[in-house]
Image (cartoon, rainbow, N blue to C red):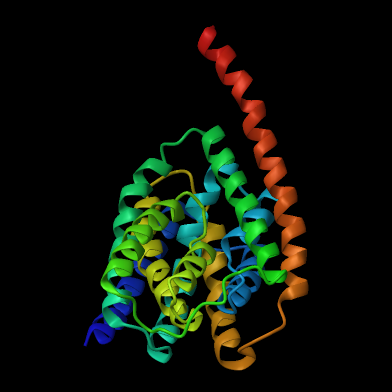
Length: 292
């Protein structure tokens, strides 16, 4: 019953978000995405479905190609990857078994965290956004490297958690949901945490994807009202991402991702260095302006 309610809620939320996105983009004259953003959405969501994550690669490409201002990046990540992630969640929640109560409580906590975090993100100074996203990329690069080196926790075989651990997991998902709105991906830290608690890593996928699938459109609905967004890029990520998710889930299913992760580590580290350098350069200018 809980799973059916979650799946039904996802479908309704996805439809509502898609309609809102199209209406706002049409009103702003930004309904036609470019080929680059469509290709970016296809590639990042394809590998996201296979477990490599989409936030860090997307952030790196947006920064390296200077497709949008730095302050737009967290908003675009949440608004653009929302619909493809809903498709992921519909597939994995239906196919992969996990305790329905753990699934529902973690999703609710992540959404609550995103509701708290979203209004803060759109008001953050550009320098702060650059610093937060730069640090997030460093963390992502470290997690990718750990995965390739076999240092990630193996996990257990459980499909549910005892009450004490479930309370900790729910609290952690509230924090992770808030951090998602800042451009910090949820998948890797969530997988590590749940694996250390003894949960089967496969069972973590519907929890991770379900949480992101609910919180990203919820925060995205608020982000659509801000001017810190490029709706052409957002729509491009969605248009390219949705079919790529279906191909990855039902056609390819699995790949040897080790080499790809090492490539992502190099690109992500470079993008992180650029962002952090920009953040540090902005600080003296702001101090001088305040003094004046």
